[in-house]
Structures are given as C-alpha cells and as structure tokens.
Length: 348
Image 1 (tube, helix red, strand yellow):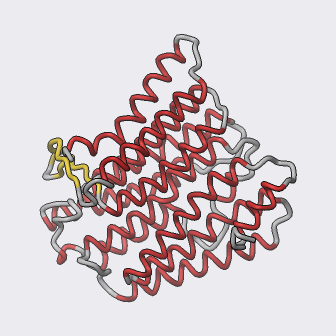
Image 2 (cartoon, one colour; image 1 turned 120 degrees about the horizontal axis):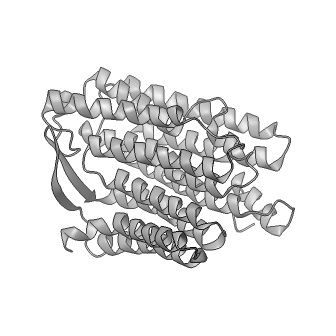
Image 3 (cartoon, one colour; image 1 turned 135 degrees about the vertical axis):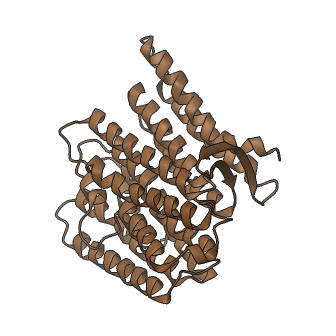
C-alpha cells in the first residue's frame, strides 16, 4: 500500500466540499449526492488503506517547524475512530436534505476530524482539533443563529491545552510524535494537562453540557454533525496517551480519577434522562451516558477495557445518526430507537 494513500480520507471530503461550494456559488445545488459521495468516499478510502495490510501506514509531508513534522498515519486506533466519525456523517449526508453551504461545512468538518485522528503528533492533532471546533461553531451559527449552541471558547479551550502539551513535549522530549516521545517526558503534570484537555474537548462532565443543549435546537442537522466530529476526539486523546506512556498512565491515580469521572457522568446523565419531560431531552442524555461508561472502560487501562470503550463509543456514534434521523412524531422507528438507546437487545 503506497504511503500517499493515507491522504485519501482527508483529501476526498475536502475536494467534495470544494466542488459543492464552487457549484453552489454558481447558483446550482448538487443536492445530497455530492455530499454523500464525499463522505462515503472517505469511508471507502479508510477501508482501502487499512484492510489490505492491517498495519500502520505513515506519510511524512514535511516539517511544521520547531521539530514538529507534518506526519499522517493510519493504524488500528485511527481506523476505529475514523469509522466512528465518518460513517455517521455519511449516513446523515445521505438521508438528510440540507443547503449546499451546510453540506460543504459538514465535509470540511469531516476532513478536519480525519486529519486529527490521522495526525502522527500532538501538535498536528491540536491544530486539526481546533479546526473541527471552529467549523462546528460556524455550522451551528449559520444554520440558526438564535438556536442554543456552545461558545467557540468552550470548544476551543481543550485544544489550546493539547497544543500546550505538544509544545512542552517538543521542548522537554525533543519531539511531539506519538511513537517517538520519550516516556520520561510524560510526567504527572504534563499528563494532567493532557487529560484535562481531553475531558474538556469532549465535555465529559457530570452536569448538563452542550451535548444535551444541542438536542433542543429546532433542526438537528448541524447538531448531529457537530457531535459526530467533536465528541470522539477527547477519547482519542486519552487512548493515544497510553501510546505516549508506553502502555500506561504516569500514575494509577489518573486511571482511578478518570474512571470515577466517567461513572459520575454516566449516572448523572441517566438521572437526567429519567427526569426528562420530552423525548428530545431524553435523547440529549443518551450520548453523555454512553460516553461516561466509555471513559470508565478506557480508564481501566487493560486491553479488554480499551476494546469495551471502543465498542461503547461505536454504539454512541451509531446512535448519533439514528436519533437525529427520527421524526418528531411517534412511530415504530422511534420505539425501536428509544429501546436501543436504553439498552434493550435489538432482537426483542
């Protein structure tokens, strides 16, 4: 597999967004076909790179400066998170009609999120993650300026912390590349900043966050894309932190603290869901609930815990698309989706 193939999952949605924008400015709308094609092309490119070899494929495009390389890599973690991000967006762009500016912005957010998970170093991940946060705010603002949305500062705060960690690693360890950072550079304070940034990036807190607020918007088109692109990235950082620390966090107390935070977030979301007065309010607590349990599983630190966390995140990713596509009126689809959200086996 040529190393240049790792550009596919990032470049394909970028090209699709450029075509949609160019044609849209000429007063033509390509409809859902072009948007869906760009998103599914991203999924296909990811599958084409990983499945034939099932090993890391890396491409170095140059230097960002100060010892930081423009390094893109697809490995098992990238593949898992790439599918979690790209598949829900592909489903949403296929089934939801939207204006061409929203389609183009959705594809740009997809490309930025894929760049974040393909980035070979902390600095590039921070740059791409900040781009995702910015595009999310632009999407939500252009769709409905009066609808509730998180502030740009809130979404960007976590990525500023990640950038800070990247700079520290370059100064102390000589590099911020995930596979090359010396284990001694991952000290307790450095990891504390990284973990706090990851928690802020995905808003993994036991109180009501912007994840629930977005479900109150009149339209869920931009909200669903925002959740699909922004929410998984904090978990991605926590899993990459194991790679930085040679398979463990600097101190077991970090594992315990993150696990307790995950349990608190999950049970708090469950309590709010039980008290929800509307179906939209209930749906707004489903993703935080799954995220809390996923955080707990990842914090355990064992291979089984990491796999369980990825499965929970994949389930939450699928529910983002499914719940956003449900009609407001009651019906069999709504009943099945609600049953799946509360954990009933699909076979029932």
